[in-house]
Length: 67
Image (cartoon, rainbow, N blue to C red; front, side, top):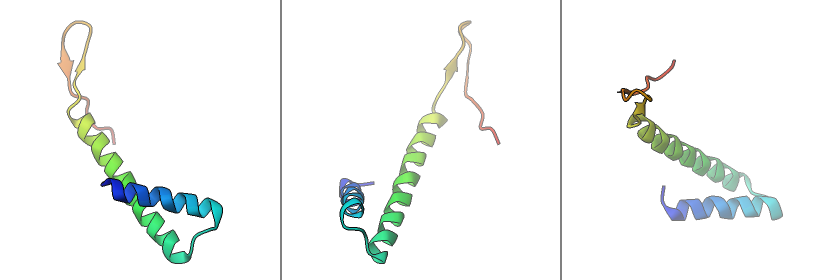
């Protein structure tokens, strides 16, 4: 997610606290927030997919996804 979208999220958050948002702005804010969340989750999943746990005895393994 680029910095312009993050700036827009912050701008809409400030406006919602002061003067309120129109319905269009509220929908834009929700869409931007959802995109931001998906970006964060994707980045976290990428980090976790490459995580290796090393035991004290020197053995290592990749954690499996729990369902």
